[in-house]
Length: 363
Image (cartoon, rainbow, N blue to C red; front, side, top):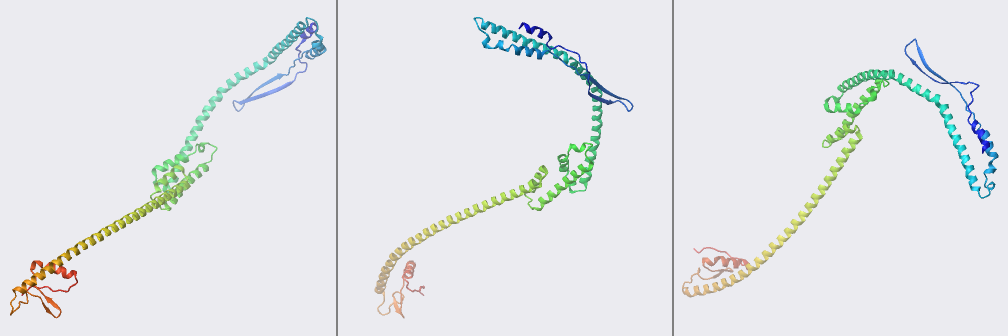
């Protein structure tokens, strides 16, 4: 490795450039007034860096066989390999160190130039910032004037439409459709005038469509939907849904009423049948009782009649019988007399046995 030392001394040797090349980096121009023009200019001299790297590479290649494993023999083979490795590592370290030194020297002018440019930019930025502020103020004035023109046009146009009667919403609509881009100088007046007229007309047309649907119950809610979304289709869909819901509720109500009515009629019919059955049963029961009682009463009446007849026959005169006290037959009729308190019982007996009779008071 001793033969490498002269090469290391010459490694990365700097030489001056014989041929100079001119290169324009750029320019920054700023017109300060109409008669004077100033521009920033800078030039660079192209430089070069020379070294004996090729010579050093050739030297290492010539001694590559020495660094192969087969050349190291003997007891100190490992020691020799470590020494050669150390020499090569040192060579690499020296080369890297020199590279950094050359880079620093070579980039020094660029670093100084960049700082100079930064300082210049900072200096020039001050009037730029000042102009930016003035421009902002002037543009804000123009935007304020444009806003007034837009508002005035909106108010005047609304006066020609039915929207003039909707005090609250006409203000809300203006806020909804207002676009700040209208304030830019690049936007022509025709753009925002057309947008305003279109929005107002679309709202009024949508309102008329909702009214034509003839659903006053749902119109207020649909109108709020139109005002909120500015979409007539959404408001129409809302009314249709409300109508559909109402129809469904009505259908359910009618079905429920019909079901309740049918149930009521069925229960009423059942109660009437039960009541009729009870009445018929009661009638049959009472008829049986009356019949039973009438039979008993008839028997009593017959017994009474027999008794009365015998009594009257005993008390009758043998010469002149009393016609009012004893029955007599006249043209298929039998006449007899009963006590007043027994008359009703006798009448019931005659009626139940289908016997024609005629009652009267004795004269």
